[in-house]
Length: 134
Length: 202
Image 1 (cartoon, each protein chain N blue to C red):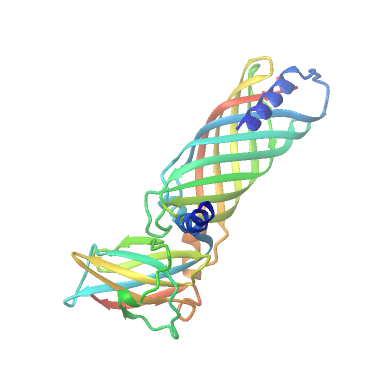
Image 2 (image 1 turned 60 degrees about the horizontal axis):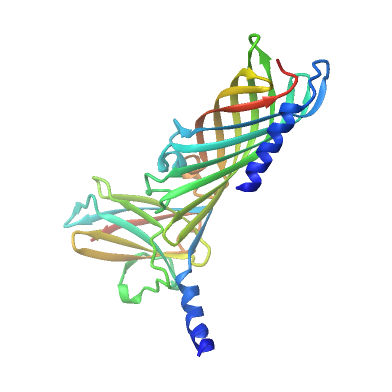
């Protein structure tokens, strides 16, 4: 009984202790602009998450929540808000496990995801998401 | 913590009881200083500076290992704690601990019977550890520190010490060239108060 209990609890213990580790030796700059009804969307919350998706190119478009592999920890690495012109600007330190990131934009009760920031479009540590129509 | 306390006690005891010999030009382990204060004061426009609150408390320790005349060469260490106030470019973290170590060179100049000034220059290698919930971020920087201490003798070989230091740091971060200056250049001032134990000075 004891053995069964230990075998059951050990993976739970390790999963509950899992951490997201980042190194500051690299930083990707992410910029873009968010518009809604052809006007800049100010004060929209922008979060960036490391994910385990495998994009095949560097294009950025809306992705759906159910298609995103967040892994065990759904922790945002970057958090900011769009300015009065709808511009967003953040940086991402290097995640030790994941090299792909998704951008989450929240405004009011709406949440949308845009992806992916990856080696295909962040080769020079800079990604411009372009104009995002929310 | 016990080991650190024991080391501090041993060093201060040694320096308090060492034989005084004002004619000695060359000396070893002639001075030890520990202070506390503020750091990350008046930072430049940079990712690190804009992301963090002023650091308090900051603990520093400095040991002169080799001393010739009024020149000292030794090691210094610094530990400071900062809250994250802006997550925009730094990342979504709550706090940062910074640990600095490196060598220094100083020269002391008596300015009265009981007081002296000690300007110094130091190399500062710093590790930064940021945390929030399950996230951890580690970063490094190389720095050049320029500082000056005012020391007033309060008896025996003990001096009360006030100091200011300005640090020029370069983060070890690779990023887009247009952003390198903002991400990597991190300068700030520190202010400290504490005690120095020295022999053969005043």
